[in-house]
Length: 258
Image (cartoon, rainbow, N blue to C red; front, side, top):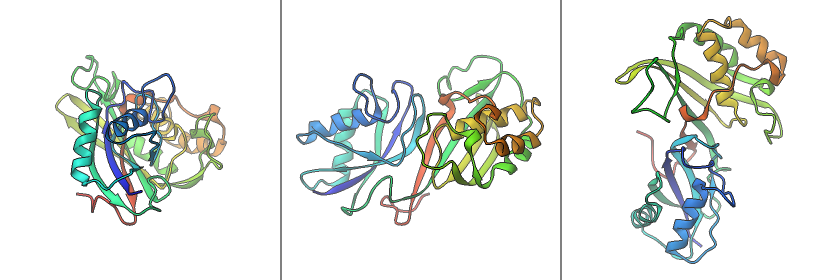
């Protein structure tokens, strides 16, 4: 059975997350239903990561096995036709080897978190950012973020229902960008690691927001990390500002990134 890698973009608002659910709309379920319109099912696809309800993706990666050989462009076009009107699209498609796996072949994941700083309600960016009504000190947040880079026990910053075998992860990058966007000043967090714990990104960003707001000194981030206690974490920020921005592979089936 030929296997295809799919690069997928979606707006997370109408979905109960990536993972298929019996009684709720999910991204996985939507794509599997679209595949069922192309070839008799059932179809089961695998993804590089399971995003939570409300989380978006710029470049999620999944793979599917089909009964016949498809032209990649025609496969992506056919899937997009059957995915309408849901806010999910296959932006690239490529044939891959039978042993290539969207999750297990991945060498890294990148996340983006957008935080909008303005008092007036967001309109154009509604559902796409976390909005706070106050300005944040980006330099203080960078000073706090320094404590998080590298290999650590991230027990403080993972969900109590996280199923990972170990809380030890290596955070390769946590870059904080200030941006004067057309809709207002933003802070954008860019995170990169081989893999992440459940709710890790939202826990880190929520904690750093407290630093930027002046409620925490930067060194308290280190104390929270060392506590290895979920109670030491700052508030977990909402999902709508979070995006799965990309997945890395030794041999990227979609070619080199721009």
